[in-house]
Length: 163
Image 1 (tube, rainbow, N blue to C red):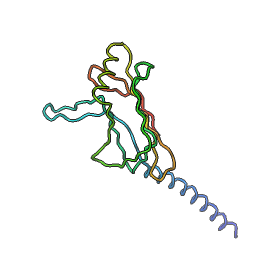
Image 2 (image 1 turned 135 degrees about the vertical axis):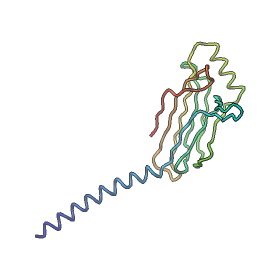
Image 3 (image 1 turned 120 degrees about the horizontal axis):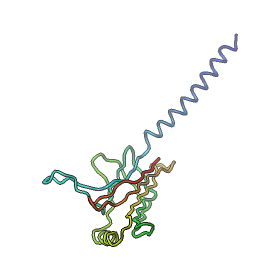
Image 4 (image 1 turned 90 degrees about the horizontal axis):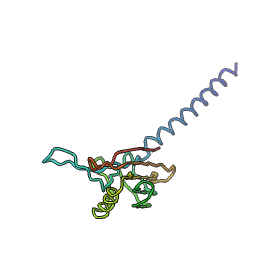
């Protein structure tokens, strides 16, 4: 007779532990920051169109503040690196109406485009971001690879990786 309540208690304990595990996992996913990179552009009211700004990269943060451990931007002409930026240890906060951006600078970007036009090579931009929540913990990443399309003066996504 005492075995039935004991069996029920063990089953309740096991189901509670499973429930706690999945609740904790879902809580972490719901409260972690999400950071990603994308093309920068603005809306031109006079032409009612979006104008691409290929020398600039926009970044967004959603859900909760993020500590950016490392943000690396590379531009390669085929396999040769022709531009590199590596920034570390800064914090960004989520905001529905804002983003932060990285700008190469018009003169330097024009030099890159001139090199691209002189060759028949591929111009590839690789943007990688490693980040964590403000309290530390798991390190997340986002990596975006793009190729430059001179026909519409913009970057096209090749590959995206994230966790």
